[in-house]
Length: 324
Ligand code: COA
Image (cartoon, rainbow, N blue to C red):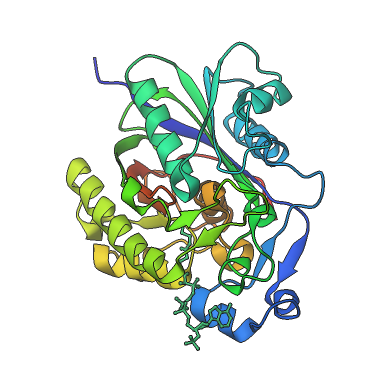
């Protein structure tokens, strides 16, 4: 009997309606559309409005991922978020209840921009171990609520959104199979990206240092999963890296030896959506017909903690709805 693999069978994304352009930001802080495009690749992003919550966006993305897979429930529900609706309880049980799912294991993963890769890897471990048959993995964040609107280093980068994937047990030769993963952390870097617990605290980021560490950590973890799965960098059809800055995406690809033509780019329209960025970029790549079932794909992310990791998988058979 062949070993059980977790197979992605559904994808979905959800975005707030409110579009915030570079020009709009340039009227609030000392920046320009030209600077933001040239230094980050971002053109516009979405901001959640009052009443639009992380759990609401997560629920909408999850509904689409379940519909995309043609199922109604999952044995395990993980929400990767660092902007939960409340300090406690976790967001995942609420999202499960919103979906009409009761009684299943549901918990949050807090790994900032690496959250989706953390949640997808651990869900795939749970499925391949036989502990559960299926899982719904959601990345959802509303970081714009924690951004200082006058901080031009962070206000230009972040946007809100959610993305989700449904996985169930299958085999490694099926399109969508999760084949290898690697997860890492280094808490000595905890102040590089943080929201300190004090009244009125905003999101703080040491942009330059984050840039350098993100490139080296993501390219290292791409090499690690390639070695685990036995692919060369040339074998990779698609690199779905956390969408933080176009210059970071291209640098990760070149250091990892993957052609920059294979980098999926979604940040131009949504900015950095933290834990939502990878499933949203995958949904976008599918919508734009960039990928075919069975293509060899590497996902990689870097985020606060610091945390980072990568996953090697094949492109799933999915139909998706445009979240824009
Ligand atoms: N508009 C105009 N000028 C800006 C600016 C903005 N929004 N932000 C910074 N600048 C200025 C700086 O003041 C500096 O001016 P100076 O040379 O006169 O001092 C100059 O541009 C260069 O600043 P620097 O901080 O070196 O910019 P950068 O090229 O590193 O870009 C970031 C800044 C934040 C876009 C970039 O560092 C970055 O993307 N970092 C990683 C972000 C990330 O990935 N975060 C999430 C990870 S999970």
